[in-house]
Image (cartoon, rainbow, N blue to C red; front, top):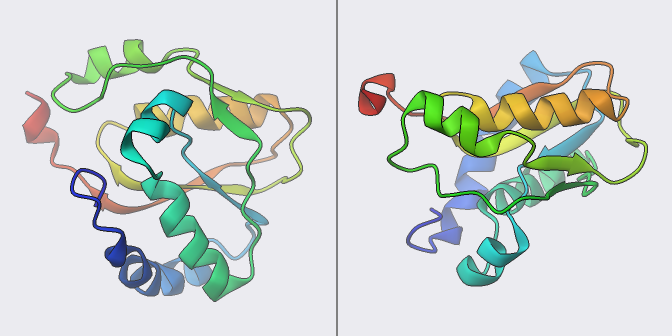
Length: 146
């Protein structure tokens, strides 16, 4: 989706994810798309996590929380080992002000090692979230990282 600007898949992904969201995460009070650094967003022209979140919000009525931001420009995660991914994302995320949501749900397209979600969740918890859950479209094979 993100590398070939295939935004037309976002509605289909949301349709697939909505039943899971309702069944496994009935307590969430906001969707939090993984933020891109402003320069990467400008280069790509869109944020795939926001596109998926918009579709999920239209199906569920949940608000999208835009308080998170990527404060440090990071190397693209593709091709990095698990340890390099963690190092790459350390202190990459911040939350603007006290978090409006208490039970946010991080939304992303693919989870590989979990480093992105771990660091974003830590920022959300530090800003006042009581718990943080994650919902992604796909999980990458760990074998790809070896």
